[in-house]
Length: 424
Ligand SMILES: Cc1cc2nc3c(=O)[nH]c(=O)nc-3n(C[C@H](O)[C@H](O)[C@H](O)COP(=O)(O)O)c2cc1C
Ligand code: SF4
Image 1 (cartoon, rainbow, N blue to C red):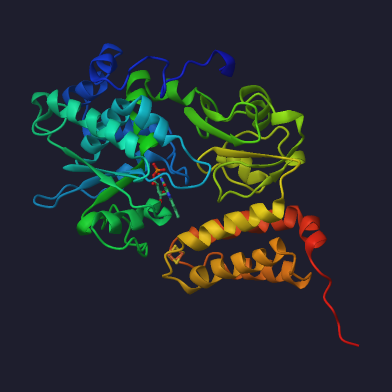
Image 2 (image 1 turned 90 degrees about the vertical axis):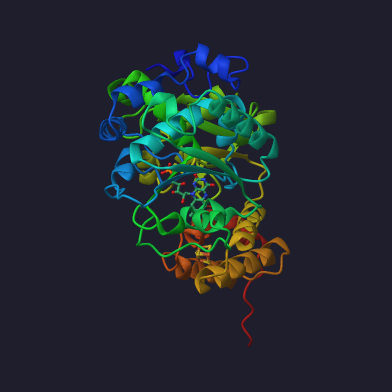
């Protein structure tokens, strides 16, 4: 599909779509009706699996496959769906757009997903800073209740489900799925060991599926157009629409809905209008602050899919791209990212609690011009000792960007470091 003629599906250009009557007038809630009347939970799971809907929260796991991990329903054992709208990864602001402009698409998708996994409640976890968008979401949920799309015996069917909104209190770790569950349960958001996975033992110890807000918003689209047509949007290995969040030194930053697998160069130079003030590109962080940076000379011909980005040593993450021009101070960038992860570490695991502190401290020496050459390798050594040794991937998320920046822009660190003095 030629991206220039692509018509948005997640964020269509329809005024006031957040109003339920406008949403219904554009076909809204017909897929929920169809799901409840004509499709079994297993059929919906198969359709979503066949569509190869890959989670939009960062890890890209097949959503239908995840739903199929839920154990068989047992009498008296509740099951839950948690929708992750914590959206705290720097550079990521796409779920917010869905909540603002098309909340019913998300609500409809969440109800269909809940029916597919036979959940009795949906918990929507949204970062508390999104106060205005939470108000919009709550208004939309109330409209859905008033219309009988939520609550007891939806649309006269046997299926009942409740939807609750929970406001986060400003911690990035609440976006990690098990931290999110702890937080929902009213506890400190310490991520849990896995296994057991949430499908086995999730919220309050019961089977739970967790999906990103955007992932769930894709579900009515898949049912409406069919899995086959959905897989023809963009690149088959990661099909469907993508909300590219482009920020930083471009002419037109913003969220752009386009087919998956766009070329990075197309996104920067055509979609986002090119670099601001005519400066040259220095680097791109492709999918949120935790994804390894790519130098300007590494992005030519690279598509925004997990596989293509893995080949060049990075990740798609949330497709929140940070574009950096030639004036960017890479030392300060590394420090800023490290400071964020240090602040957000929950402190449970020693390599993360101490390691993020060390990364920040050593990088601070470079910023203050007090570092020595030996600090470059010390930094890389600390990073290497943190990776893969912790309960959740936050420590990895701190290591990847810092390591990539230091390795790829090493000369900038060398320029501000003092030589190691050897006594004679
Ligand atoms: C530290 C950390 C923060 C995360 N923050 C978010 C978040 O804000 N939103 C989100 O959807 N997923 C986040 N994730 C990923 C979730 O753990 C989980 O994979 C995701 O919600 C699953 O949904 P999906 O399969 O639909 O993508 C985070 C993961 C980690 C390790
Ligand atoms: S890796 Fe960091 S954030 Fe994750 S559980 Fe361990 S200490 Fe907490």
